[in-house]
Image (cartoon, rainbow, N blue to C red):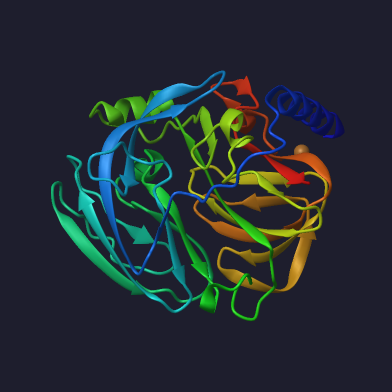
Length: 314
Ligand SMILES: [Cu+2]
């Protein structure tokens, strides 16, 4: 394990030197922030850049009725106790749905070329997976997933109303795709044999590590000592063990359950389809956050283009 860590650190230092990631603008994530949202379900392609990357056939939610699907879908945001309306237009050729895990229960299909409006009230601050639950996980695997961020009342920088404070936050939607057996087949209108699932793409916010280590919405960067809140959603089919270098984090929420005494650690296993929230104080320097599975650090077998990003204390 020590050797693995050292090689990852060396590799990341090299990448950092090559790309001068040290300073970049922090841009806001692609968000929809209002009490009502409109999503479109569309088919198209999603590109993983870098070595081992590929153009994958995907289905996804998007906020633009004529654009390519987004993987993950648009980040939805609301406050604790807020009533939210989401209208979903299915512009694809097969039935889909929209379910916010832990909040909504309507799993009925939205037929092709029709729409449906969902109204719900956010029960508590946290992070939630929304996805299409139909078709034996195929629809979710194809890219129909995203995160709903629910902030504490008033939008204050606390994990929940009266909960622990943070200075900055990131949403990490991690996932996996099996290009050959699922995306190529379903994307061409064929029948997926769901008994075979061998994912070869592993993503952080839809990106391979090549991009995610430079993505301001993924990299946790700020003044040393500031505390980041990571809202983690595993939208994939495989569990993911995320390892943070430099410091220990504190797990404050495990899949919607708040921990009365935060759990310290440096690796968190987020099971497929579940969520977690951790607080991480930034240490001076540049450190990796990567997945503790050799295969899942790759894009089609090419190292460090899987689930990886950086923790940066300025
Ligand atoms: Cu590690």
